[in-house]
Length: 185
Length: 185
Image (cartoon, rainbow over all chains, first blue to last red; front, side, top):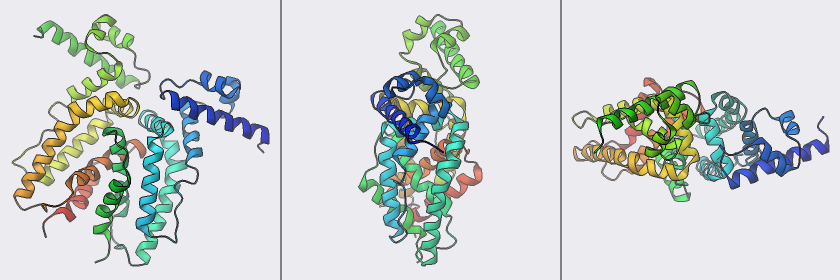
């Protein structure tokens, strides 16, 4: 079992990661610097994390712990808009930027993050869509896996390639464009 | 004017960048290593490129020089499918992966690449869609800028987050899903 002390130390280390990324980028991030900021030895960090990419994943996980939670009593539109807005915000944060770098560069780490973090969240969204299908709102045979890519994909694309943070009006228009053809006539 | 000799040297350097990225990732890429592989001094590289990110941009530009050209005599569907297939391929190449890392990490460099490389290509696609509108194929008032994001976005998203290379069947389904509601009734 994790003691209070080690949990507090972990928290200090993750705060140090966030502070370091707010000042510089992922390439310049070093375990030495994180250890110095957190007031711990390097070996303490390596006890819990193998590589600095793991620290970025955990910092992102921490920051977004319940951010992407869905509200099954609210509408599909509302949920998707809220989720995309929060995603846009999270990816634009220095920790989110670092996550994009790690995902693009370290395929193995990316696979791990995908399984542990993304898949369970995608599963929740899938349930939300199944609910909308059950309520006769969305066509039962609509290819919604692909539909989800046309919602999440543009957010990443705008941030990485256009250096633009999708705002409420972009997201509103995107959700309308993508959901419209999926609705039951 | 560029002499034949300096043009050949540039080519050697870009080949060295590609070879280095095929063996390792962007983080491990060093100007020293590129210089050694190309058989030139570091100062020769710095005469033309300020930073290793610039070398990645130029290697990507080289590799994809005419890859994304459109055929204005072919259909919109055909053009989009071909372009997305080639994009999928180019981004999955080590040079494309490195480009994604640079775009995610270096916002200034990303802005430069966006203006010089992406915007002119986007302009071509815009013309192709205008042509399809002129031919009565696509609705004139359809928000096609957003539509383009729902085509290009998922390709990047699948590669970065799912570590999957969108293949012909994925792209075929994507283009159908996105173009269908845009067509004139």
